[in-house]
Image (cartoon, rainbow, N blue to C red; front, side, top):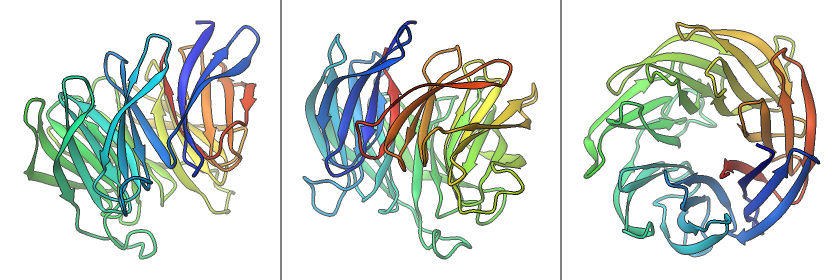
Amino acid sequence: MSKHVFFVAAASEDGGIHTLSFDAADKSITSLAFDPLPGCGYLILSPDRTRLYAAVSRSAKYENDGELAAFAVDADGRLTYLNSLPSGGLSCCHLALAGNFVYTANYTGGTAAEFALAADGSLASRTQLLEHKGQSVNKARQEMAHPHYVSITPDGNWLAVVDLGCDGTYFYRFDPARGIDPASASLSSAATPGDGPRHLVFNAAGNIAYVANELANSVTACTYSSGALKPFQTLPTLPADFTTANTVAAIRLSHDGKLLYCSNRGHDSIALYRVASDGSLEEAGHLPAIGQGPRDFIALDKSGLIAVGNEGSNTLDLLRHNPDGSWQKVASRSIMSRPICILPWL
């Protein structure tokens, strides 16, 4: 594909959702639209790509709360605001969409929430608010529950909520018509106390999950079955000689599932791992983030074109990761403050 259209969330007080286009022919990044939404964070699309949902860390509309906003997406990628609701806790930072429901992770609030959708894709109501309780060994960062990620498991039967503060992943039984069952909650603990799990990604087969540990600067491979994770391997995200402060952020698999990527904020890199047929990992070096503080990144196509949102340097950077392991900087644009989520549309 010669052109890519994607959304970028900018989390500053004057931020919002940027709609951008990248032309591979002339390597230009063009701004197509900007929709103000202060504190905008994670973005997610409906399966038919006609509705977009945005997390807002601290709402300007709802006092002492985060916010979940819904938009319609037209045939040209333009956004039309539908409505919003309070997210149920401050620092709304991640979203999942399944059946007739949207789910939020509210980091500072220590909660996860469920929202029912109306027929037009707008938000009908908040139907569940889950308050996590717990802490772990890192008293500065794990003094209470801090949900950081939500997703529906590949088998379609569970909502996974990764909780950095509680050092593990909660699972809730999920039904696409009725939503989640709070009474079914179970916790799969991190491989090591203090890991501080942040995000995870499942492989295509749905039997392996890779967990990005923000506090331990590591990645843990786990088997997955019926709402439970079992760790079997942990590898560092940093070179052995790097001793400066660092926290990991996003974790993604390549389109073919043969490479795992995890971003480092501090080392300002993307750690690489080769994925074996049994799901185990082998360290494969690092890609530069180009900028500083890579909060999010995503492959825009199958050719190795990767977009990186560098929150520290306020840049969107594109690089190409070649099959031989080499890389080239492709393009860069600094039109936004705190780019923290990249969502391909076309």
